[in-house]
Image (cartoon, rainbow, N blue to C red; front, side, top):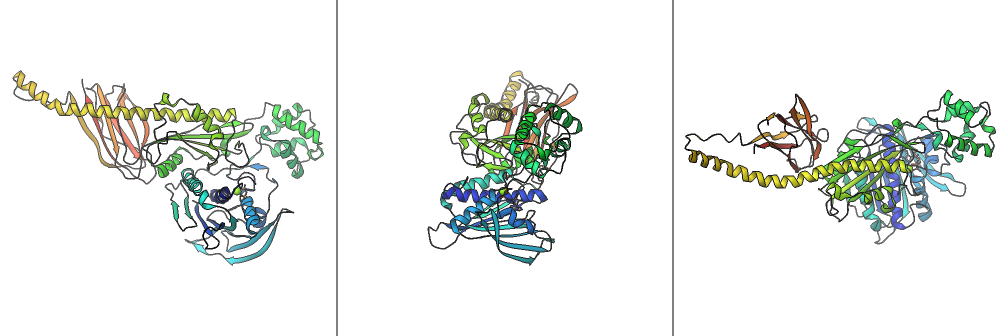
Length: 584
Ligand SMILES: Nc1ncnc2c1ncn2[C@@H]1O[C@H](COP(=O)(O)OP(=O)(O)O)[C@@H](O)[C@H]1O
Ligand SMILES: [Mg+2]
């Protein structure tokens, strides 16, 4: 059984599958997920290896009639629509429940409501021989209101054998990374020793929900077509093509059938096995199909990815990037990347890689993954990064079909279209990291230089005044000036600009910004006015709590202004900033 190869892995996989189901269930009804996970020993004795796992969510719930089918048997793919979801084969949670049954011979209990006046409680076992649910007990309860609304959600509880203590580091890592890529979820975990782990949301926005879509002709295999044929209501091939395929209209269907040398009026149910094979081949060879549309996908978005990273890792710097939609073998996909520096990211002597697929973290078998190979192939010194720096790289791919290498949903295969997007995405954020790192180098140098100027200039001026026999000391402003433009400024959700600083006289202009807040990050950008327009001199950067930038502007401009805003809605930072100039 994939994912249940040893006692530690079994615990990990069981938790993961149930949490994924809960997150999917929250997404379908668009409520901010509240997920509660409890793992406890079945008997008090030390060293017991039988556990009870209970996972509760506030998601869609499962309609009573469907509970036994959903979690008490393995679905033989009855789906003809595709959707970006965390689950893939319709068997993840069910497999975990079956594993529990095999190792403990105990039933699973499922309490669920879809928000109606009733809650149903099922106790099930799976009849393995016949792949059928056996309902041991079914009770109905009156549903209760939770904060003015009838409760909806699901509680799954079952027993399983395993080894939590061996699994612990991976389980905690999994939960932390789940929190990164679902920053709008509240996740609570109570482990067998009663220790509480809480991952609180910092975002209240959810990404757009994934939408169901039809198969693209380039993405189907013989099996899928045969399943379609079994259930299709269509009596002829023309309708069959239009009904079951993504972006296939009358005209394209006609063209294609002509290309495939297949009669438009042929009954799809009468296709021979050979004809099905030829049809699939023709679908692959026909180049006139419209490319798949990615609007059914639900990427995280730059804002949420940034929020998740800031929340769990509190770095000094983050850059994020969402690539444009692309496709491989008929499947649409979107790659999102990020890089972060400092904070809780350890310096391990290697750049840390976080991998995600459809908003789930991939924890095992990192070195077989395409992102890992790409990360290794990049010459990081070109970006001023060294392996001993606290740097983390994030790669999220979302698709209606993730190109997993294995059944275990852990490693992503190398598809040229996908690897290209990953590489370009990492490069993009690496360039921003490079700017950040060279800024830091700069800061150290400039701080030293400027402290010398500001200390000695007044003395030099005074001295030369005396030497020249002048009465009044001339102002130093023309040589050196420093002006505070933000003092304890509380940021808001929109960019707010500082006072303009008149920089026309000076050759060297530096800006300094510090975010004094204990845990909220801010976004900063710097604009300059030259040739009658404002332009961005420093692109948006994210300053983590307590971090700062100090940078020399690369261009001469007349006016300078600094703009700051909160990174996460409703979470203000506190900013000090000044502009400092030398005429030299
Ligand atoms: N917590 C839950 N809330 C709502 N529906 C659920 C939940 N858990 C499972 N389901 C339903 O049961 C089905 C089977 O779950 P599972 O065996 O994990 O397969 P998969 O997630 O791959 O579809 C899911 O597709 C979903 O419809
Ligand atoms: Mg599942």
